Image (cartoon, rainbow, N blue to C red; front, top):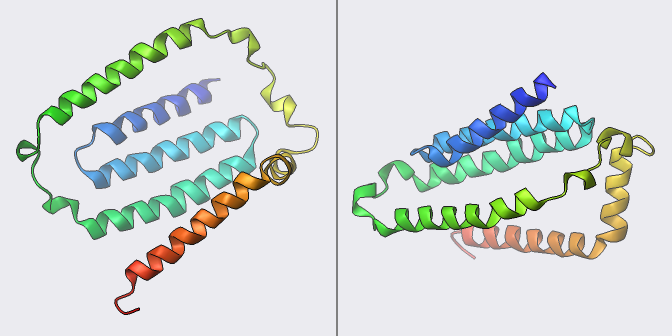
Length: 166
């Protein structure tokens, strides 16, 4: 239980630092820490496949892509914050407060007795990887295929935009 609290605290602190950092590069590094802590939480839930996918896909591939884009955009030569419109900060605070006001009553009224107590026992029967595969390719086949086509279109668009001569 202590490890759960430690990983949860690390994930929460890293998530706060993702938003609080002024440098985009450091924010991306804190996001990697947050994703790795979440992977540790998945391991505690005895879901090693999801933990491995979390590290390989999100903390690995997606974050490399983010860092690559950050370095291409050169955020260090961006316009200073003082020259930007100041109302955006107030708008962000207002949106955050509105979200909090809407979420707190929902969270306080949520019935915790509906939450299953034995999460690890639910996946013990056939194995979590097999159940994920069956769910994706039986119940969610159409959204999976639509997502695949969208990713293919995005890759083709990136190649076309990246080429100098067509």
